[in-house]
Image (cartoon, rainbow, N blue to C red; front, top):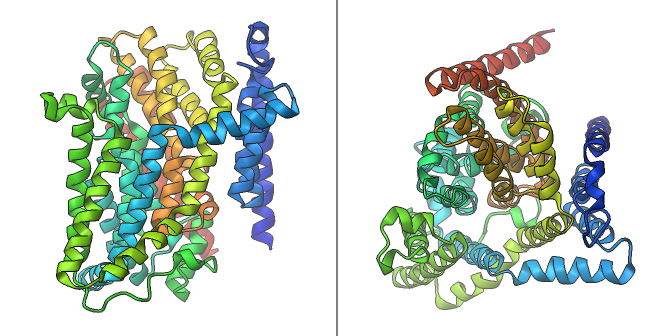
Length: 541
């Protein structure tokens, strides 16, 4: 009861501070209200109110669906100037229906459903259980299970959506056997999704970032920015430190203690969707998991380069940079589903009837993630219609240009806040990278640092936000309560964000990767060591 009260007080303080910051920012945007737009709230601080309300309610009530819906309605009310008819049409027609009609979004939803079916098939065929038995005989410790999760997440760098659900389905039985809490598993999945994609030149994220550079040097800029992507790189340092040292703090400490001491990996929050399939075939083998996962990786890569024109004559790099992740992942998962079904039929671990039974079961398993994604996309549509992007652009260009050496840290903080409020990294890239490139030429080392700060801040905000699609799918991949995942990983993400902020101040004055990156890593290790020392002193006191 006491913990719940403390969480509510902290959530209320966070919400209050965000609202106060919006009120302060209003002073800098008084002239924005005069533009001829559909709403008098367009391109003002009020454009950020819908996501602030949604996030605040989610933290206070621990209920995501209603919180997101209230945020959507708030955005529609502001857009329609509180017109009843306008609110309904904007919230449903321009929000929910439009989001579900978008081809890219539909492709992602199809990919989720097919992946849910694949997971059900692998579980029922006994592949997941067999891999769990195999890995348990080789992974003997909790640290080993966590390091194996980190390693697998690092290897699957093609796309964050694919990463979240694949790593979750493979590592759940291993982590369960080694008493790693589902909250910790969700954090490890989330921390190896977007952070690994944003430093991988061959990924859908690299393609997205490259698309914002109009002169064809997008991939070159992306590669130059990798050593300065402090949040992503320091996240890996932090995860390895946590796994090796056994350190846990904040709400995560309770979940890990329950898992280690009581074997309660859910901390009393297990639901039906979180239970492993009890009808798994005892004849299942490791190949029944490894083959579908391998085929899925290969098929998704081929699907992505296909969508980028590889088979029409484009080279691999160009095809990948022009790829459509939604189309590629959808086609790759569909091909994998057919191959896996045929393979299981030949192996006789599943009958045709059992395979068809997995279809509705897989769909049902993904309904929570689909519902949250739909509401999150709709909420983004509300903020876009209110001119949130343009408002942030105006504030950046008007008030940050006079602090050249501090610009990387300032841009990182702005990207964090924008990505956290909107739940989208890619949208944040689209806003801030063109602004940065307009201020700095590609030849300026500080410009590269600032572009990297855009990417790092966007990933950081996306990592923290409860309405982020990657955060949502990390919860689904680990089969962990979504609000639990957000609340337990937030202290870790904020620790890494603060160290990254200081590192960008250093890089602003010394834009040299050989100096700034080692300094950032050293600062991260020292910070984690201090936290560990302080916690040990409290335990012995």
